[in-house]
Length: 166
Image (cartoon, rainbow, N blue to C red; front, top):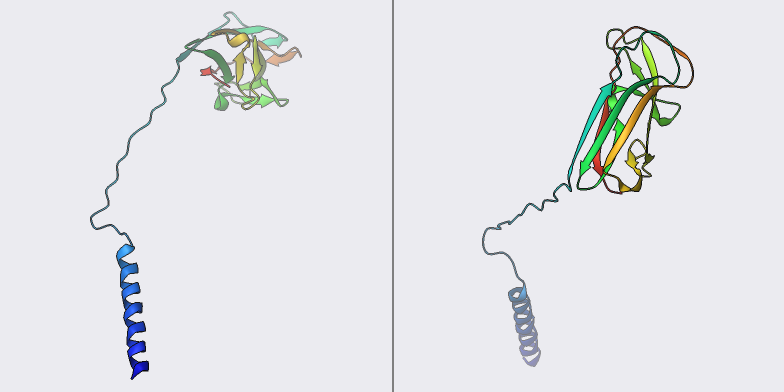
């Protein structure tokens, strides 16, 4: 009889402990709701770029011929520029050198190089950030120094600009 009483006591304690453990657990007792907020980082400024083609260019042999000038400006920071990625093809693994196709006949090619008081970005080497954190950048576009026969056609010089931070 004594054994049965002890078994009943142990069982009662086990039930009490198990019941108490269940009470200590927390769980949602209503629908879960979510709160959100849009965290916005504003641009530090705006960029602008103007490309001005040279006029009266004629087909024929060219080397180091000035074909366009560009001015890029930034409000609120340093200016940077790049060649528009889909508008030309990189030459010689040098992001300043490009090949532009003719608009009338895509087989017509023009090899060009851009120069500016800017350095290639370490993280984004296709971008050239103005030296001394300048907010204005003058860019020149010339035919390459190697003589090339340029066919009569229209060649589009397309450059991008952005406010830069690195």
